[in-house]
Length: 223
Length: 216
Image (cartoon, rainbow over all chains, first blue to last red; front, side, top):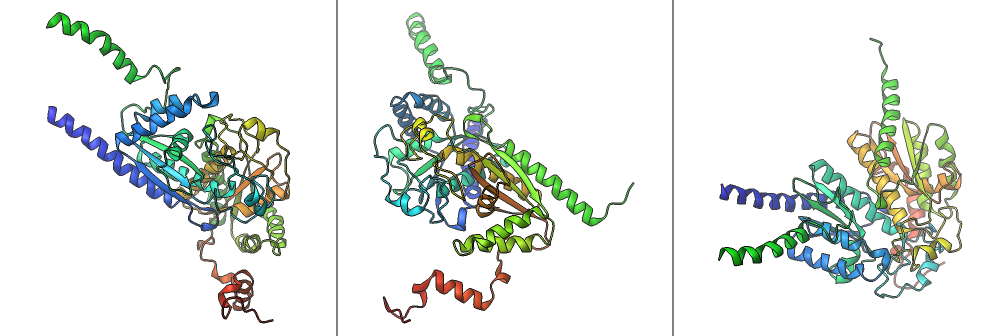
């Protein structure tokens, strides 16, 4: 009995590792504007790496009121089995040269001359980015999401994790914009049906609280 | 049971497929769980004006000219174009900085810059939502076995011609039921003269004798 439960647990993790790689394949082969390579996809499937990322997200949550929800995202991502980070390598340094005006600078030459936002704590992405290039990320994300749906795997998309990963410096140097897809192979998706105040009240904090309360009494009474 | 001929089967199947693609795009993942995209499908003769417009941009954009020329070929067999558009202003309040403004409020208050291709400045997450919807439609087309390609040039043209209204950004998904995949490896458009002329214009250093020497 013990052994088979343990086997199930390791197989479940292995399934998440394989699924993450299949999603990477689908995200990589999704369309790219102009057919030019631009996105890279990085897999975090070590729970220590995921924890590091979640802690960075929690640090960022305190910077701005509008980023408060990063804490909730961190609580959800702690339950993820793997996180796929999709980056855009050209949007910061290499505008598409098609003068599409999505950035509002009319032509690409003006965008190149424009001063970028400084890399300060309250700036997640140092815009103005080339939006036409960054749109590739949308295709990569939906490539991964549609693969996850085909495989029947619970998934969620988060920009907070992408911004935190950029801030940690674990993505390529030229990354201008990054988004994350988290996957989970569990019986209940940790990315759906999220209660209010999830950052404070989730399975982890509730376990901690119960055990912290009950354990000392149990220890002293039954010793 | 009535007999349905093959052209009708194909045409009706295509129409139904485009509806299913629209449903997939409508229900795709989006940030903030807010669906603000607008969609419209065009097929048949209405595509002609887009093709003409694209082709007329030849001097400014060889890419648009190529796609316009390609669309003329494409219209000879049943095909359809799904347009997906969205407004440019942010309703997310993420304050992420990707648009070049520190806060969403600053971006929304910034002066609008109009152009033939898109109106800016636009919110990055609006763009991401719209393009995820586009890819969801393409993914559905793939599953239905249609030939499919995403064209931003045709989307820009539809926006400029006001075929899709009340949007600032637009992207298009073209699908076709041609016998051979018409979207990739389109070498039939390249005559030898045309290839050489375009190549010399676009990549002048390639045939240059040595650095800097240009003979007139």
